[in-house]
Image (cartoon, rainbow, N blue to C red):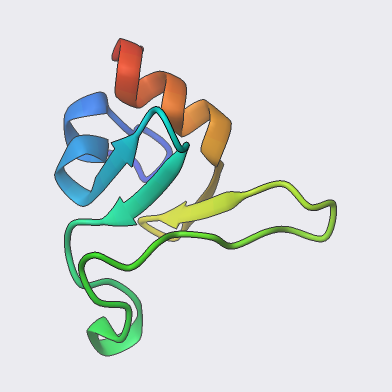
Amino acid sequence: MAKADLTAARLREILSYDPETGIFRWRIDVGRWGRIKAGTITDSRNVYGHVQINIDAVPKYAHRLAWLYVYGK
């Protein structure tokens, strides 16, 4: 699978999402040497203020991930 091909199943495997608050949390330890622990909120913002989450070294916008998480496409 190419890094850009993110499926809803893969997303649900590594992140949890609360649609009421819009908060994503890691389900697994990530980052260099697993420094970011499971349960940590993903709250990275880019220079424009948009929330981005790096999944498999590819930055993704949180609003697009929310759509994929909820609707599966």
